[in-house]
Length: 249
Image 1: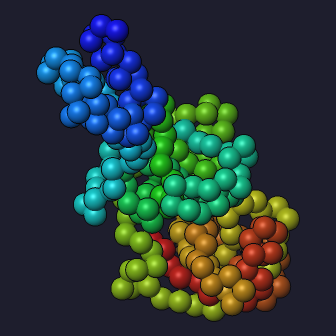
Image 2: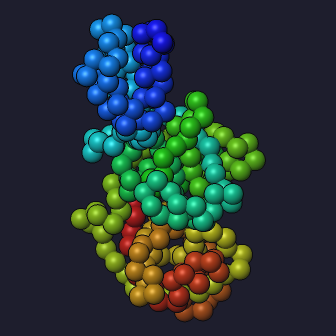
Image 3: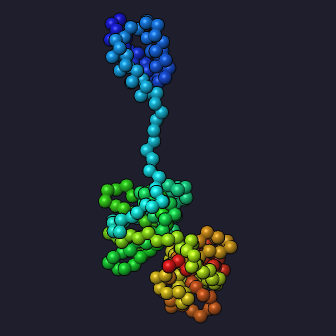
């Protein structure tokens, strides 16, 4: 069999049989059973070496602590079809939470997203990676999209600003408060006369110690019931009636 054919066969063996084929090729060459030309042996060796190399996976570059965000960009949202799936930081995606995906910001970063047309803004916490469509800089949850008025158009040019973690602020003050449920409220909006409209609050309780970000939607209390705050049925089911309030901004 011609030497060229033997060289090709040896190279194919290396590709299909991996390192075993490389070992056989080397043994044959060293024993001079397969006296290949030096350049042909070198090509075969490189082909087999590539086959032996471990497979690599595409991964995100770890975000740096001083990561920046564009002051303005196009936002999109993702909803019910992703509910229950794991986000990039390992959490389970919940469309009703105020979260978002960004390509580089560290997980746990809080970003204020503003609709420039209405002035409405929400604060979201980064817990996922994306968006992956060109021209988009942030993917927000359905809850955030609803407040921003983004559900209909699907995308929107928004203002973006990184803010300090409300829970890490040295000026944070916690206050105990009774909360009742109001069927007219949805998502993570609350009614209270104790804080200004639009203000962000962190609510926690003994049954739900992890703070939940809420937004004061109104200061007009529906009834005089002796409670300090009204929340949606969803919020009430998570926290109960005794909540700890922390001022977010």
